[in-house]
Image 1 (cartoon, rainbow, N blue to C red):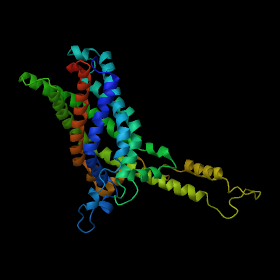
Image 2: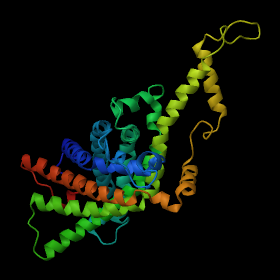
Image 3: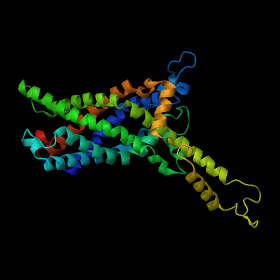
Image 4: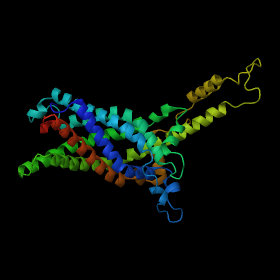
Amino acid sequence: MSGNTNTDILLAGAIAAFTVDLLVYPLDTLKTRIQSPDYTRLYTNAVTNKPNPALFRGLYQGVGSVIIATLPSSGAFFTTYERSKALLIHLNPTTSSHPNAVIPLPILHAVASSTAELVSCAILTPAEVIKQNAQMVSSGSSTNATVQTLKRFKSNPLLLWRGYTALAGRNLPFTALQFPMFERLKEGIRGYKEKKGMMSGTLLQSGVITAVSAGTAGAIAAVITTPVDVIKTRIMLSAAEYAASEVSSKAGSGKGGPQGLVDAFGKSVGSSKDTARGAVRSLNLLLTPEQRGKKSVWKIGREIVSEKGVRGLWRGGALRGVWTMLGSGLYLGAYESGRIWLASRRGEEIDEEELL
């Protein structure tokens, strides 16, 4: 990639992520609340069964954590994607110069985007857990929603990574669907405009073509992967509940009578925190994941179907499609425009084949 440095890619990805987070975050909050198991109880009128005003309050709750994590995660995604794609094309050179390719180019794009997504999800998962739980905090509270959420994970910060598998399970098929469609749509639009003599080669035109292609591909991929997104939301919302129950069980295990626990010889051992914690850990090892409050993806999916029917797995799908269309269009449009602009500042140009 002669025109862009790693710094260019990181900066362009960060600018794109920051822009999108601020503009479409309210729609993401609405989607989370609609997909929540508490949606009916917290956000609908008991009499009319229609959304109440609480649904539309505090739409930017938790945005700070996302901005902080999205900047490095988006930079990591695009850096990994660009380098993986370049490496795969280098190892499969016939894709760019001969019709009889060893591996079709869309497959290379899918593999590169999936690899990048695994890296990005590891950085993004804690922020997603904080964000989604903060989005559910009552907007009438005097304490910041993000601060309230973080307090719930104080005893076990590792629970912030709960949902990594679900996040990756949603994002991998999403990116594997989106990026090949995006690349193909962009190529088709460029080819059509060149054929009609409408290509001006300006930064604005390049950004618009990228935005339209990315938005269309993103909306389609978002709707298709909605069931996985609904399950992911449930898992991440349950992480805070599990953290709270864990604190309660630890607090309870430390309580005893005046003399505390005693061994076989009558010696007091109840004052030892290590003994209590060891007992809790031993008990947790004997319990199944469901008994510890953790449910499998399959069980969560079955619960959703039993509660809401098959339609429950598609709850928020239309809203997700809309905000993903806007988000993906702005995200990749701003990213590609940023790359071109940063390269042009140094007096360098990016070939069409080097663009996303």
